Structures are given as structure tokens and as C-alpha cells.
Image (cartoon, rainbow, N blue to C red; front, side, top):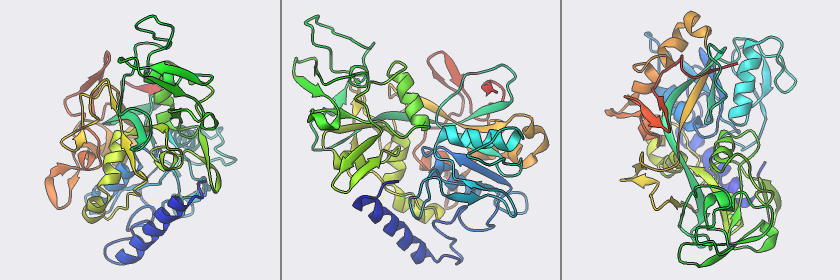
Length: 405
């Protein structure tokens, strides 16, 4: 858990927001899980940090015919204290278990709930404990698999940096690891070359300007970091970089108060290490910057964890277009809701929320402005009509194409 000064300031601000709204008042509790009432919801979900705020927004607007809120989405870390793996209980009388931190743990908790033989962090969950997991990474697809990864929205991932850091504001992705375009023996300055180094290395950009890349102790001009183990963004970024990361790439950093884990989509590392770069969800960066508007519109507190981190361009393409996710960005991904496929047939609320392009999750709108999709308010791109990435097309609510065991 991070214990630095900025983290304590975020927690204090979140607590103040909860007091300002009234912990049990008509406006609902800003940091309760889930937000407002009822305390326990028909559909409980856990997992990805990337999409946790989106699902919190959806939890405020998706209801059954009687107007009762259906979604209870539990953040990857405690939204009030910042604690990692603290205990949560998702249903009245349900199992108390460690909070899943990230996509992998969220999916593991779902599988524990649906498979009586699977243990999650020492607990045998039961089916009523978890109905869905949030995942920002894909899986290995198995035709007719037990679990469906249901596309919900489009995200982009780029690197974040300190505005005063030595890393350029635009870095090419690169075509392969070890790319040396001019054959002079100095590797090109590309993200793939940066993230696959095992020792301090000199790279050069297209103008033959050189940059050193190394770990925090090296004093290099570019110091690459990665988010915590189990992060869907870590899995996606590793795949994008070529399948593995170099040994100089760390998931922890040190500052005056000690050593801290890098939590995904948190700019603390770029504040502590001036020359740091770290993968960052574009949608998360947008939502964190719009936290005041989202609090007003949805009574949902989105912690602004950017800490001054700015987003870099990749291949000269900006991550934002008119303040929204640039859908033409070269590094994009679908994000998913993971459910047990068989449960869609028996759980009407689950089916109506996530199955099919017109399901509630994809058509939900801002309470004060029905022209604004919740998905886009929280920084993501809309998959309506299908979005093709590589050779694969992702449609919202597709419960059959992306299955796994």
C-alpha cells in the first residue's frame, strides 16, 4: 500500500467529499460500496482498477423495473483508506473475503464463486458472492468456454510522464524489439526498446538525439515502470511490448518515505521519480480529470491520482481528441465484463444488464442529460456498431465470441 504524502492527501480529500455529501443523506455516500442504497445489490462485481469508476457510474443509473439499483461494484483498492486486499462482504450474510485488486484477482474471485473447488485467497466463495468481474485484459479464448468476456467499452493505453521529466512527449511504439533503423549499432528510441531492456542502455530518436534508459538507481533519462502484478493493464502492456518486459522495469519505487508499489493509473511514481514513465489508461486519465463533474452528475467519487502526470503521444498521435478518447490512437483495447455464461440464462438482471448491444450497460445515460452515455462520461469509447482491432471486431454485449474456461 502506498503511504506517501500524496496518497494521504487523496484519502483525506475523499473522506471530506463523503462528509460534504452526507454519509447517509439523500445524496448518497460518496465512498460507500456500493454508492447509496441499497447497501447490497443483486449483481456484485470486483476486479479491474481501469474500469472501476465506470461501473460505479453505471451502478447509479441501472435499476430494475421497480427502480431498485442492481449493480454493486467494489473498487480494486479501498476508496476511502487506499488499503489493498482489505475485507469486503458483497451480500447480506455473504462470505467476507479479501478485496480483489486488479483484473486477474477479480476473475479468480468470480471463478471461486462459481466453482466450488476453487479457493480465492483462502476462501471458498459461493455463487451469490460475485456475479461479474471487471477485466481490462483479454484471455486465451476457448470455444464454448465456461466464462464469457463481454466487451463493454473501448480504452487506449499510453505512457504517462512527469511534465518536467527528460522523456520525450512523443515516443514511437516501434515495429519490433531491437529495432535499429539506421544500423549504427544504437537502438531506436521506441517504447518496445525501452520496455525490454535488462541493463542501462543508450537509445536514439529519429534525429539521432540519445537518451539513457535504466532503473531508478541508474540516474537514467528514462526510467520505465509497470503497474502491480495481476493488473489487466500490465498484461495488455506486456503483450503490446512484445510479450515480456526487461529486468530494469520495476513495479515499485522509492522516495523519502520508503518503498511503494506502483498502482495502475496512479501518477505518484512520476511525481516521485522525475524521469519515470508508466503505462496509463487514457480513459482513467480523462475520468480523473473530470472528477468534479462526475461527482455532481453521478454522486461517485473518482480519486484524482494523476499527481501531475501527463500523457505521451505514440507515433505522433495524441491520446485525446477534443477532450475525449482518440479512437484513432494506435494502442487501444476493449475492456470486458466477465460472467459465467450459463448464469446469463438463469439470472434476468445479469442478462438485461450485459447481454446484447441494447443492454443497460451500453445504453445507460447521465441522469441530468439523456444525450450523454455513461461509458463516454467516464472517458471510454463506445463500441456500438463494432470496433475492429487488428483482425478482431468487438461488439458491446457479445456474450458468445470471447469465451474461456
